[in-house]
Image 1 (cartoon, rainbow, N blue to C red):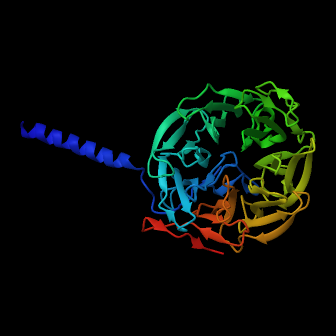
Image 2 (spheres, rainbow, N blue to C red):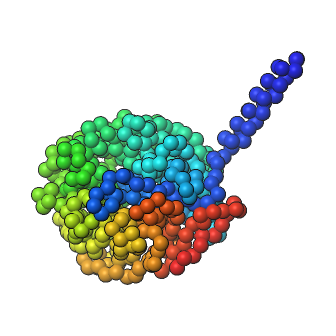
Length: 458
């Protein structure tokens, strides 16, 4: 063998060796750096929304899940390469509740040339312990991608199992049945679809759930029942999002019903469908859905911000945090509080008669921008009356936004969010708090070792 062929063979062997090393595990980042984003739709009082949006959007569900088997809370978020860069990385990590540490976060997918956290991911955990990461696409320009962990309860390596038209993924694993996945396609506006799979590998054809011009939805499961709640966009205009609808299925989408059991024909196309919860359009109000949970009997409870205008500033006030609770055959409404921005997104926690809301309800340093200071609101009578229990954050440099509730949330990792300057580009850090809201930890922005303890900030 001549020297030229020997050199070529050596290069090929080296390529194979290094390829094996790189595929052994996903690359890791040296700390928890959140993505900063601006929509770029400015009006008198600033951008429609902007800031640290690592846990954005409300329609990426779930973004964290606690596993009692390994005593870890697994989570995903939109990260970036450095504090002065806007380069979206789909990140996954966990908090070890026994050791009180986090590892270096793993890059599941590098969204090259993308800075938009609409492409953030959702996370799921199957009954064998495998982690699934559903990366959102954006319309037909960027496909959605599904990854599965190579080992149970491990974030070290992921393999791609599916690519398709998926936006705002909401994957729910139903034990004994498999995935019940709700998502959006831009077929005629933002329309709602679902698909099922027994194993995450083989999927049934996509089926349309609703198409009234466009929708944003939330979903959640109670035992084998899945509930979806959504608004609608008149003539496809997301700035006019209004109304609330609710549907349920306990057979993986074979049958859809209203909350009182009326069978529905899909796709839903009538804005006055029997699934209509409340006609906010007739009231001239907009609806920003935040969270969906269940009371002790499995009845759905919706948390939403209701306002009068899509643009930031006083014209849209009051921006009311409203609860909609299905009980005794009807929807009941209560107000939690007011806040300053349509995208002040928070989460709802239900434990018997004690209900809590965590969100950026208090004005932050960027007063009229997205987010603010986090607060804990509490009800002791199943949401009938509310009072602020405490401020979770205060005297912050940057607004906090998008407080997310893990599935099966552990008391020590109950809310998960990011911060960021809503008025100008900034670094973004990630936080979590306990159930009482009296303890807050910041995930390490820079890491030298493989593991680190989150920094206690309160």
